[in-house]
Image 1 (cartoon, rainbow, N blue to C red):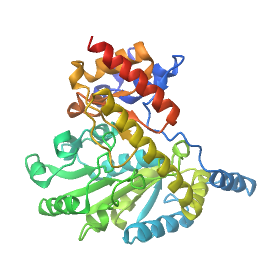
Image 2 (image 1 turned 135 degrees about the vertical axis):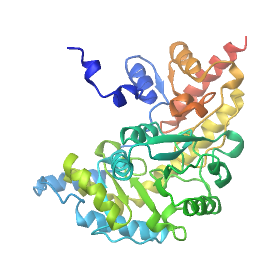
Image 3 (image 1 turned 45 degrees about the horizontal axis):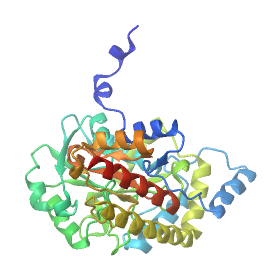
Length: 389
């Protein structure tokens, strides 16, 4: 039997993740410094791990509500109000999911009919366009660039909206560029969404990793609460990637629709992760502050390092990535990443993994030690210098 012919054409047409490809290659090489995968190098704080262990001792091993533990949803609602002064009903307007990835998938499947269009600013996280496609929608990419600080404007979006446009999907702080948008800039995007009657999905997984200025939750903007689906989770800020826990907040009708899909697929998020997330929200802020301070120091180190090497580098304001331009080397982003890995054993991600507008750039994660960053910069500097000989 030829299984490739039996697989859905939609699935066959989706490329594998450009991030994972380099991660897998690097994992099999000795002496590699990886700036590839966006994962904190911190271990989940001990008190959060301990809460999970204590929960197991207490026998918390069962299913939970499809929506998630009410105790966790109440903490999520408190957090959203304390941070952004936006209110939700914990019983009907919050769904706990298996990471933000599941929340994004559920949102797309609950919203889209075949042919519906979704505006997706690029460069963007690798899952965005694939989730739209898998839900039967059409991802319409809106390119951003270093000249506009990798941010979108309402005027720019006007050129891409059509009668089929149903959703605007944004993610700030941005992966892979580290760009953030000010409240004023987001206000113009909100007006655009209202004008065209669009739903806005706002992926705010890096919200707490904002270094300059204050993060604006999109649903906190005037008249945006009932037009917005906020996605967030615990992976980045609390160093909880392996726990796979996130959430969606929106109006009750839409959260109910997402929960229908969730209950037939995941059923519920593992209870151990939910117990840990409660502890993270109740007593985890000091650890978050500590990690963000560390990331910020590394941000300055790697930004200055790339500029000293002679590569133009946009200053990231959030997340834990830099996105230097490698256009001056004459290589494509894929050629640069492959040759650097083979010659100097530094793994990073070619910019075109995040869409065509990422070509000419590479993504480097600074969620690794200062020692690794310093050594990686030396190797990259040597690689670039040899290219110029």
